[in-house]
Image (cartoon, rainbow, N blue to C red; front, side, top):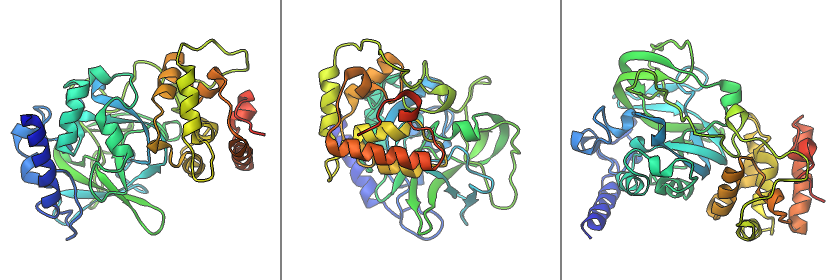
Length: 376
């Protein structure tokens, strides 16, 4: 009972304190974190590790990255220098970072950097203090559902997390840097602008850090800082290191698509898998699990708009059985084929349309690669 009262109190603090000393430096009252007060987050009693506050993005080990799937989310891992700049606010407490918007897919949350304290406590209860109880279990961590529902930071359009969606094009690396200000963007709130861009309000921390690519220049010019994180272990990185392939992720880290039939026999659970595909529909009766599968696993960093069109609304649906099957079988966008689930007529027509849109852009659709999700 005491913990529930404490959580309710912290939630009320977050709503009452909007625009307190968490102001973003531009005079707005946008909420930066919950509670919305640097005095709370700078108090060592509230630090998730002994190395610094949550907005320092401290990554002690890979298990602290909990796996999620859904969206939309922001990807600020590559922000800092032009063109995805991180510009300091006048008071130096925040950086306004230009980030990629990823409409849907697998992503990871560094649980020591959850900027909503009640959600952090709930995630620790479910996943353990180091996240080990949630390793390999997509959307088990409470923070995943809160981000997918858009309620982690009040008023934000999307939340910054980590995704491998741009890794094939942008790479993953590490450059260690000495003590200096950097932007801690993990779970920071983000807003879309009129031009279709995305800017995240990332708190700034002064300490040692690692930039997420090789050979980076630690000190940027003028009023720019890196979006970065800090792993206190010399050989450790600041990106997730999953124990196996990641279903629906691109590149070397992702699980493969299915080859041609016959398919391997799936474990029990296909009834619920097909039920999840059937139940998740949009206003036109199109079953979103099929259309998302058809585009998500052949997408690149530069054609995320098709993913957004095909997957919009899927974050509101339960896909736990689908995710569990794909993890067990180590394949991507494959659950409906393994279980023999059949899309309805409206979905089949939409699959044909989406496959043609991909072909028009020179993208090999899943239909072209393995003859599945072709529609009729």
